[in-house]
Length: 252
Image (cartoon, rainbow, N blue to C red; front, side):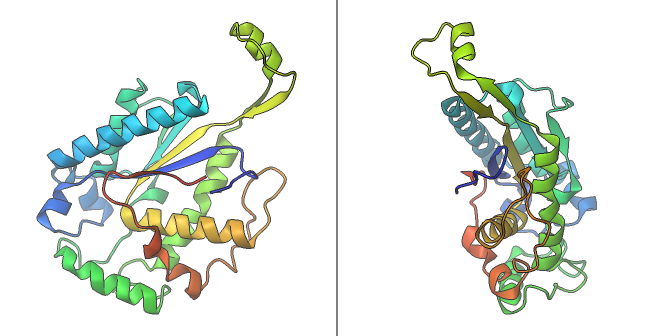
């Protein structure tokens, strides 16, 4: 996706295959989600490592140094373990300022009636989403609820991660490179969001729609008016942005 109005480059990663995935359970509450028994399955650990290796390859191709990587993640154990595969490969301490746990990226809560129940219920939830994305499952979050909390992510990351403009000719001389024109270039950050299937689908939905429907402010942060994006025809289509477990995707 084109994202020239933004200061940084963005990737999303869905957590690797988890123990709830293997058991066919819905684990969506924060209280359950942070428990170690609902972390990654063995296959999920391998998926997370593969995604981290792909991310490393992509940021190297982009010429982004490790100190310009910022990772934002959900507090759930399955997302934390997935993010640890990235931090380990990049040699970033998990308590580094480059790593930030935020509840804005937590799993979509499907309500007490469905918590720890069969994931077969997902089909009825997604059918409800398609009919009315403003209608939540009983006691849980609607698509619109999740979109509202995720709409803060880009504004937050763009505000926190200020890039740098450098003179490429000076940079080339410092690095003993040749043939670089005398020009300025913007070096932003590589932002990685490590989260869950539904939130990342919904995030991509509002991101695409906002870029299509709204101008951006001069500082690169999304226009605060998301009224046209927060509509049923747009939000009801979030499933088209689904990710496999352990999938890494460049979104901007």
